[in-house]
Image (cartoon, rainbow, N blue to C red; front, side, top):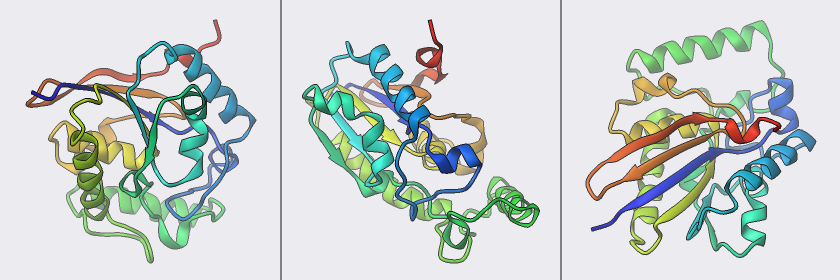
Length: 206
């Protein structure tokens, strides 16, 4: 029987995060100083967990967030299925009242069940779910990997947690997050269960 514990974190802060600008799948940004500090605090908090494998998205901000674990010798793999949802024409654009209104409208569509709607050149939640299913299949196909660290992105993480907990994607807003916050999810051989919800204790300066 496969048993696993997934430690799922969102990447650390980037300058676009700080400025409130949407990144999405098409923006391959670096962590800023605050993001590197968050990455170090997460490493200090979890370096003693015997991770068997790390999975990141193909965007460098996720690998930079857990690079210290990689440097310490934990094997890792990039999966495009863990990439952020593509926001299309809105990626990297300054936040304006018009774009905020467009995002609010899209969120209302999604949470009311219209999960195929997307911005121009972007992705819908259902499209992201398809590639996340493939990523999960890969992650679960290694029974020897008991403790797994996954670093991904805010919106994608919300969808992934719906997938794991077998909830409709309309429930995505139930999963709050900030940069380098942790969701710990256990798998007992038949179902996933959230053991640690939106944990940011490691980010508090002691």
